[in-house]
Image 1 (tube, rainbow, N blue to C red):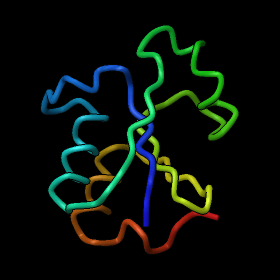
Image 2: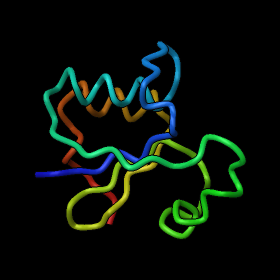
Image 3: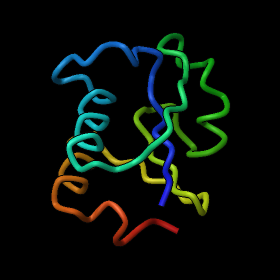
Image 4: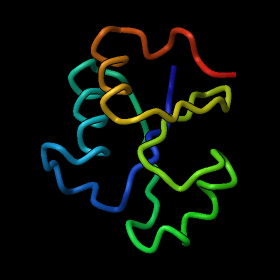
Length: 92
């Protein structure tokens, strides 16, 4: 199952503690295939596509192949990935 990771433009930065980097590292560790879709870091007002899709301007976001969206705090997303529940209880 392919997913898209909506990520800030700092894709080169693997800074521990950065929400996008933490989720990306968890996906890598779990060997989940994903495509990165970048959104502007600042200003958040330039994230119109993200707001239209999720109703908010916060990153990271995981988009499943059926179009459903997972937007939680990054720590919750990392925990979901690490425990193998990424594809379970998906939002509709």
